[in-house]
Amino acid sequence: MHGVRTKPLTPLARIRRLVLRLVFGAVVVGALVVGGTAFRVWQVARVDDWTKADVAIVLGAAQYNGVPSDVLEARLRHTLKLYQQGVVSYVATTGGRQAGDKYTEGQAGKIWLVENGVPEDKVLEVGEGSDTLGSLRAVADVAKVHGLETAVIVSDPWHSLRARTMAEDAGLTAWTSPTRSGPNVQTRETQLFYIKRETGALLYYRLMKAPAGVFDGIAAHTLG
Image 1 (cartoon, one colour):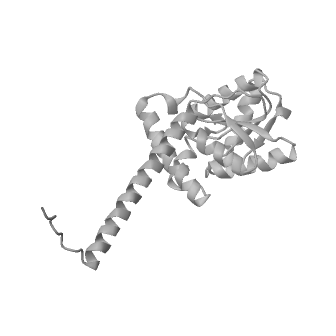
Image 2 (cartoon, rainbow, N blue to C red; image 1 turned 180 degrees about the vertical axis):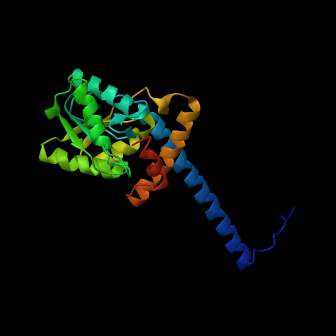
């Protein structure tokens, strides 16, 4: 029995088939990259590392006339525990000021920590940076002056991977100990929102080595 002969593809048909294969391959690879990154954001969010470090870095969030917002206070309370347990010798508070603010986020954080028992000379206020990357680069410069090389980063869980990646790129040896309280970790819907947001922000950062614009615009008041 003779096989059925198929009509040879025209050059145009071959090109179309190749384009379709390339598009399909790109979609599959893209889905794997996005899915893998989202999994890593979720995975690192679950890590709470209390290994001793030179400094705890509190990523800034909104403050109101020197009073930390609920988001920022949750981070500060967690950092206070790290200091009290001897995990760190110094604390660095970060974050600049919004237009019209009297205090920076870094100043508000330092005020709160000192009022709650941390010696003033143990708190390094770094009131610079309008986004995560700017804050961590500023902290890295200050840490270098003080001879501090290792850092534990305190933020919200879903922010951990991106913050750690940026800190390491800035020259710090870093790990994370996120807060488990505060408005950003209350509901599954909130958690899902921030996992998606952080996945996009981290992919953008890895590609551009820059803050992710709209993502860090939100972060200035929520995720640091």
